[in-house]
Amino acid sequence: MAKLIFGMNVSLDGYVDHDAFAPDPALFRHFIEQAHSLTGSIYGRRLYEVMRYWDDDHPEWTPDLKEFAEAWRRQKKWVVSRTLKSVGPNATLLAGDAETAIRKLKDEIKGEIEVGGTVLAHSLAETGLIDEYLLYFHPVVLGKGTPYFAGPRPPLRLVGHDPIGEKAIRLTYIPA
Image 1 (cartoon, rainbow, N blue to C red):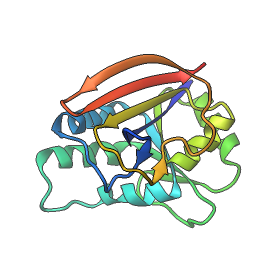
Image 2: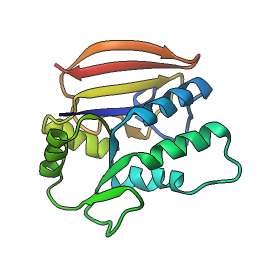
Image 3: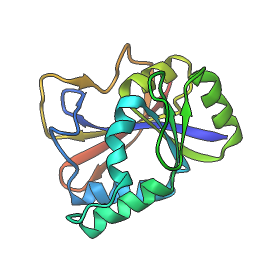
Image 4: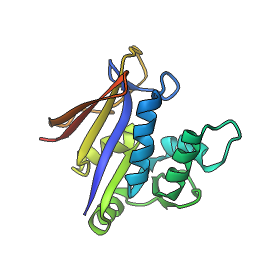
């Protein structure tokens, strides 16, 4: 059975915004290693469209950026969307009953599957499908934006805390 993990970079006041702050080299290395280890990723439409950046090579990329792109491209991806008509390489569109499709994936696949997108994570949390929450806190206060939790927070239990690099700390929670 697969384990569904929702993890994102978060400001100290609880917002996610990939344009407002970025991982330092140590945290990016962590994300590269994580991308290598994941069985796949489930995305909502908006985050999937952002992540499609990694489908194409860019001449200015450093070796770490290339390595992340290669790991991301190898992963299976499932995209939950009612508006997309097609998805890119190594991706499957989940346009119908997403909860049933994801329950089936979870039952049939082994390993860890990352959940990407706050709205998608909220809907999956409501149905009890998220197994672990990873919050990568950065020393930034945004004051507004997209909250990590897109709705009422589920009861959670802290099971880990790790500094990663010099600027981030990862808090790991599971449903209580």
